[in-house]
Length: 112
Length: 111
Figure 1 (cartoon, one colour):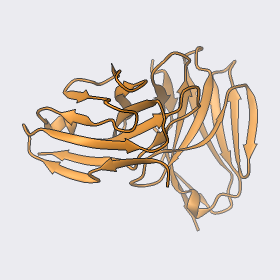
Figure 2 (cartoon, rainbow over the protein chains, first blue to last red):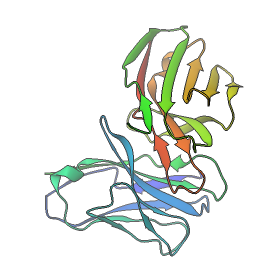
Figure 3 (tube, chains in turn cyan, brown):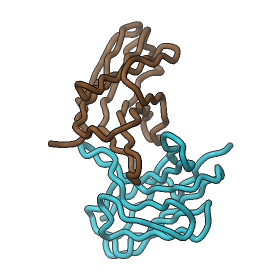
Figure 4 (tube, rainbow over the protein chains, first blue to last red):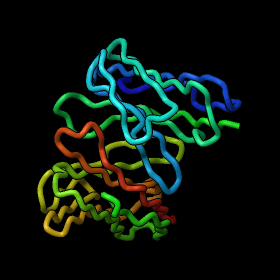
């Protein structure tokens, strides 16, 4: 089934630890995105990539980094997790010139 | 002023009711107007989109856009328990590497 796969589904992480959230798509979409979703704040863009080899900062990039080595994969890394990074993280993708994004099922991250 | 405002609800209706969900926006550069549906513990999925003022219908769902008032609506006719979800409005602006989302309205349809 075409779509976006995110891993892990959920994770409890000790503060200060490093963690990488994985995202893989099989739709050959050029653009990929990472959002966090928090109650009352909605979806906020962390980082994006318009094409393999390029990345950009979104609304809330601090504490996060991304890479885009190929079209299909777009991992998100928390270098040193803090409790305020407790959230649900969604990866999304879109085709060039397309309307709307396809989202993964999310990763629930709790930083303690 | 936020670029997108959406009433968070929650909204609870009996099965078969007509549901109206609304968003206002302030950015005149928005060109595409979308509605996403998000079931509990799932990612948002695109329900409908339009790029012009007026109505667009898809089955029991109607998306309405009023650009002059900067107001969009989603109507659900003959609502079903399976429509219970959070509905998010979203807006696209050419050249922006982002969609602008509302915070979502949680809908429960009671059998």
